[in-house]
Amino acid sequence: QVQLVESEGGSVQAGGSLRLSCTASRLTRSVYRDYCMAWFRQAPGKEREGIAAIDIGGSTTYADSVKGRFTISQDKGKNTLYTLYLQMDSLNPEDTAMYFCAFKEGGSRPPPITDTFYNYFGQGTQVTVAS
Figure (tube, rainbow, N blue to C red):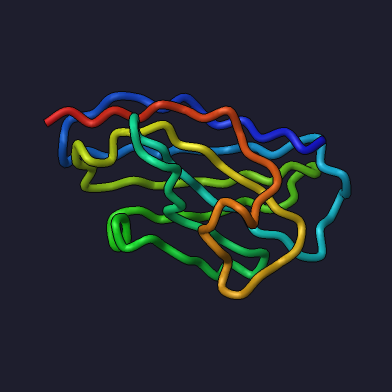
């Protein structure tokens, strides 16, 4: 069972920045031939929204709501751990949500930000942006 653990989120003022990380462990393989990882978020009363994804080659997909402000990146395969990052700049109150990382063995081009594609999700971390 793949385990995904997000770093602690936090609270920032509008216009500020935060960086989230997500560490994947208990991977079923030491090296994956293909995979996708992604970030999702869910605000109270709203559906889960895919915001960024990255594949093994570093290709990325962004939702329009975060394009130009958020950057997804990865650190592959150190000691069989994969780490996913989300750099969030120019945050605004609409970015307040629980943020989740996701993992799927196997690729799709471009990497998707639809939650039905991914089969592992982290527990989530809260990000709050004050106006």
